[in-house]
Length: 623
Image 1 (cartoon, rainbow, N blue to C red):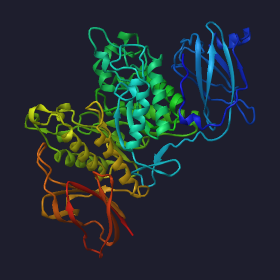
Image 2: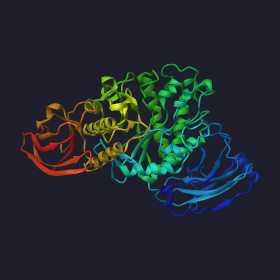
Image 3: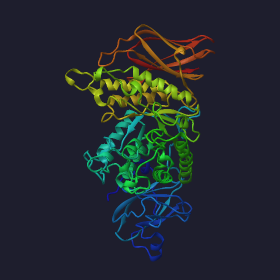
């Protein structure tokens, strides 16, 4: 099997020396120890020679990995542990690359490891202490935004991706099922670079893509994370290895969500956990059993342990969405979901601490407009670090009017502002909030036609809808851009530019101490000589973010008339003060002007603006 490059996360690591690189059969004692394992050896500290316990040895291009014991020994695969991931799966013959990572040591990739069929290859490895360069994400001191571990602000600006979607999928050759894309490994690299150049730094992705479970007449297993349970798909795992390579190389972060739960529930009899497929779960799930079944909980723990061991140290990891839309799909009670969280949260935290000596951000996603256990169950759960929702309600999910001929690009933005404000009002003040799914779920790609003459397709309406909802989310006090589900083959260049613009705007705000709440209508007013302007904003004691949107007809109507001689009035800071105001051109993605305003104690703060063409963002900071 061809070797695979590890990416820049490996390229900068100082050369790691291999103590031994023997490609010969092991002795009888060694065979008894590893029980016919294909690759074995010891991992030690290069400085002291001491054995390293808990080092992870990954076989690239496969789903196989091993953990070193207290004496530093590892074994790929130890068939004497039936409960271990990939139990009994053999490498076979070929040439492989080993990726080795250990807590407190620089990672390394040992290439050219040749395995002979029926023989045991021995590789003893010494790792150099230090770095690894991990730039994990944590909650900022103010509690509403994110920082990297080195103190650099991190503003999530991205979208929800899928492993079968365009871009990254072209470098993937599934072992099961027939892909619907041509193989071209140059495309993923180009795509990752394009995202980075646009300013995208965040992706939410399901580990599996289970839509093909419903294929007829025979289920297509393409995109399955595991099948049977505990035997992980080598092509999917290899695809994820390369996703993290790109993330490390180009500086974006991945929020990992394990199960695509709506499809798992819809096609349960075809899912590997079901008794119909030989899994440990029942053939027919009872309400709440996804959470309450001990056998299914064991599967959840094993899957998260595998994910943590393989990718928990990667620079590209943002965090874990422990359960997608936790209060939906399973007919569970609040107690069932709560009990599951009380088991799973400490399990994940302890595994991260033991394996990598660090933590990562944890959340659970949900849709506030859907029925099920109250969202407060996880909005203010002390074990979770930030809040995520999926907003598809009202005009957000269906912006199309007049039987699909026109698209309302104003009401969805106002609805997103209200949705964010409602969640943040209920959220612990030291937790960031971010929407990780939204979009025209009830209108779909019909947005493209939007009544253009002769049926000509144009993304203009969808791009404007995307722009407005994104900025409304930010203006209400969310921690970054909302991550839209891909309702089109890919985000347009203009959509990607909007994400970069949001990121640059918020990076100019002192987000570390900022603790905003959405400004109610009675505290924020806009007067314009000509044109109607919607004002959305959030503020704390010393800072504020405002977004002003000129009202308009549903598209494809022409651009609205500019708002002339506009004055923004803010009644929020009773003690008055002097503020620096940064005016941001949301479409060009750059600052347009900077000025200072002041108000006496008890007076409203007035911001005069000569003209607003479509919309404008403002950042205010007390001097």
